[in-house]
Image (cartoon, rainbow, N blue to C red; front, side, top):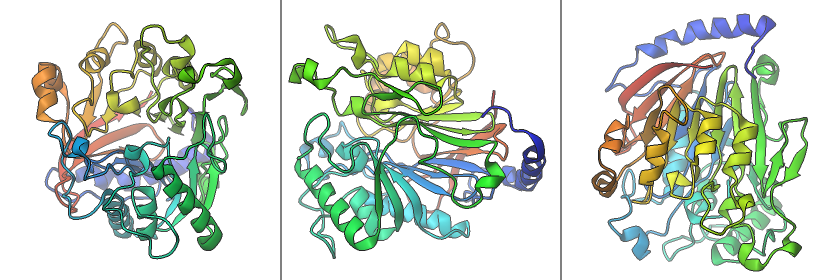
Length: 422
């Protein structure tokens, strides 16, 4: 995906010329509307988990995760966790839906999602069931995270790691998962919402829906990994990273984080990696196959930008991943004082791992982190706000915008770039 060719070069150059006025935006302005030819990745700051809204070059839309921690939990109410953004008057699923709807309506697009993807089954990525989760007006399930978002915003297809059986590596039967399965059953049976299991190795599951022919030589979303099945880099072939469960003691079964979906979004010379909560730093005595980041990053190759695996927690972002991906831009979706680990930030900035500039942007860095980690965090380009990566038509340059997350006005706090894609 690094070499746009032929007439597509000419077309995308024309589109690029029309997008230049967008660069006249300045701090204090309202973030500009999307235009055809742009790829946008919005890391939405809710203080309650992960949510990335992605607008593809032809207007196809994708949401990766819709996290919602239980606001009544002592863990969430602790000063170790971030505050709800913009505030706690609504739950995260509704805030995410409003962000997407507001932006799409301002951009002249129909307010709906073509795709939603759940990287794995944890509350900060799909929504915790809690005492404040309202009952759906139709169907025997409660609204939280992705199930709440669907009540406010139409979705065409949801891709998760385990549909339809939800039994790998063990049966998924927590209250959160039982609620989600009721949502799947009712929505697929009554609303026509489609559900699919992520197909590792495929480039045909997440595709452009509106003008695929315009971008067919420059755009691709490749499913890299899911449930330990890793794309080999050839065709749509995969290999297994996990041993057969029959050969393992249950204490060594793959964890939920290890089963995360990972994808690479490519547009011209721009590449972006999203890997859910996959780990890469092993605890003492653990088998080597539980390091997902090393083999996954070898297949992904260099990228321009990435979201930190597992929020930059201590078990993720190993040196092999950094050396293989070599990003210019890192996005950290933070909601806990565990995000990121001190050693993770130290590795990110380590010029011995790979040379060159790298800029780090966090959605909401706690003061506790700043006290413990110290001056390494002073190097962050931004420590609060929605983080928006805007890739220009053709995928040769991109910018990073920071938007104020204290209200819904989409006010620009900072602009970084342009970054050249390699």
